[in-house]
Image (cartoon, rainbow, N blue to C red):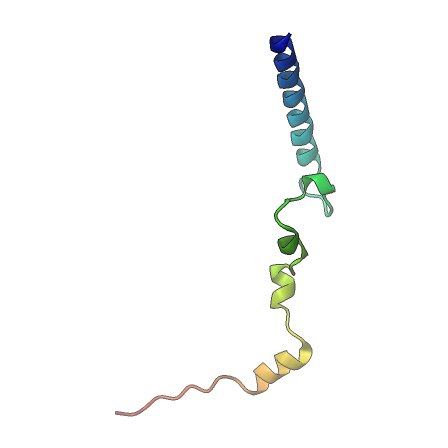
Length: 77
């Protein structure tokens, strides 16, 4: 009985893996992914801003950088 149960489990595992792989292939270049196909990570990491969002600057910040660039000084020896 144990052998039968194990073989059933193996077959079901392979079937579910194939289904998941097929779903991943189907949703490969789509805008949205089903929740169970998204990376799990930790709650904090999932809530974090994306790299793109974090690097964005406000108009005011952009203007400030534009009008007051870093000064470069060289000491004459």
